[in-house]
Image (cartoon, rainbow, N blue to C red; front, side, top):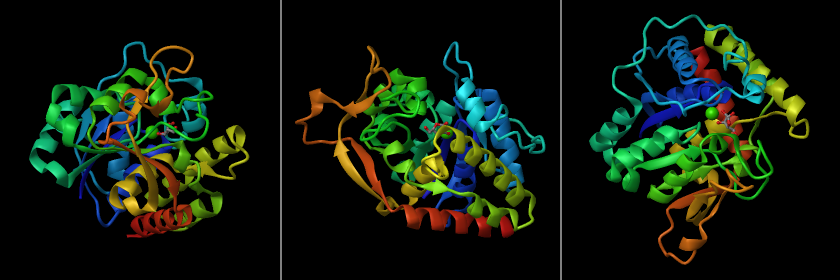
Length: 310
Ligand code: BDR
Ligand code: CA
């Protein structure tokens, strides 16, 4: 299966990038860059640097657009580090981004590969919404497996909003209303999949540059979670779980519905069922509500360990 990642390259996005490269059933054809954990420019820089570190310097990286007035939130800098990568220094990339825009790459890739392509957004929905508004075929038919939103538990930036969706609720709402095939991998499941220091120790023991850097980044993330969410006992594998579900939907149980995102009022950023489409027999969203966490985490840690060793 061909995949495109739409990343706001912080630490769990970096983990998702490595997993997409390492996963035996996925072929990463490109990365589009969005903002959120970092600016678009920092995200591009991080992605290019990580692709070189991971031995995949040929994968193209495309610039998405930033929401006007965007500023990195202090909580993002705390969780992901000011550079987005837990203050781990990755050597500067030797190339820049591709010339085409993220939207053009998404739309043209769908025109080329159709149902063989899955798009995996792991940041705010701004670029995906722009691609949908520029191509009704992309909107109706492209398979999107997104990390973002939450349905059955509280949010992580407010009582009801998840971080990615909270950055651009209008874009998320447009994606839910226009998209014909959306799988939402939200906090309902990602906070059940936890990475711990004994897992990252295995990556460090590979004694490779990538294994060491990934262990350092993930440990930074685990320490941040120990401060903000000590009850979890690890860090949430948000973005890598979306990659895993794209490759193997049997990891999760889904609830089919039609989603919307509140854009006004006190619940701005809440992802919830659209009451105007409640009785519509066509359900365009598949919300992951249960996950086989042990199977996912074990496979994820093993696969990256083998990839770093190779
Ligand atoms: C999401 O927000 C970002 O901080 C993470 O990278 C993840 O995509 C979790 O709410
Ligand atoms: Ca992310």
